Length: 245
Image (tube, rainbow, N blue to C red):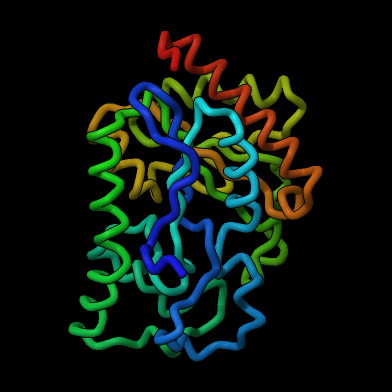
C-alpha cells in the first residue's frame, strides 16, 4: 500500500492542466485511532465525496493530471494552514473527534507526517511542471447536520480569492451548461482557500476553485457529467486566457 499522503493520476506536464483534490480520500492510517465509529468515514466529514472518481474520469484526457490527498480530512485537513487549529479538527459538523485531542508534540508529529510532505511535494511538482491552469476540486454536502435548515441548492460552487479572472469566466460557462452555480458559495474562497493561496495565488498560476454537489457526484452518471463539463470548462477558460496546454 502507498503510504505517501498524496496520489498522482496521469502525467503532470509543463503547460498542462492540474487537478488538485485535497480531500479526495477517506483513508485512515492503521496506527491512527480517531475514536469515532467507522460509519462516519463514508460521510462528508471524512472526505470530498465524488472528487476522486471525477478526477479519474477527467484525467482520461491527457492534457490533465491530478494530485490527490491520500488520507481523510479527519486525520489532517490539507486545505488549512499548518498553524490553523482546524488542520487537525477536534470536531466536524457536530461530531467530536477524541483521537485528535493531541499534545503539541503529537500535533507536530502528525503535521510532519501528512501535511508538510503533501504541500512540499506539491510545491516541487509545480516548479518542475508548471501547469497553465489549476482546477481545485472539492465537493459539498447539500445539508449540514448542524444546520439542517440552511439551504444549499447549488449544483456547483465557484471559489476564488484575489485571483478571480479564471473563475469569472468559469461561472457563465457552467451556467450555460445547465448548472445552478454558487458564486463564492457554499462558502467564500476569501475565507477558506489555503491550498490555492499558497500554491496558485502566491505563484501567479491561474486556477478555478470548484465545489461539486455530493449527492449529484455520488453516482456514475453524475460523475461523468461533472467530468465532461469541468474538462470542457478548463479548455474554454484556457483558450480565453491564451493558456493553451
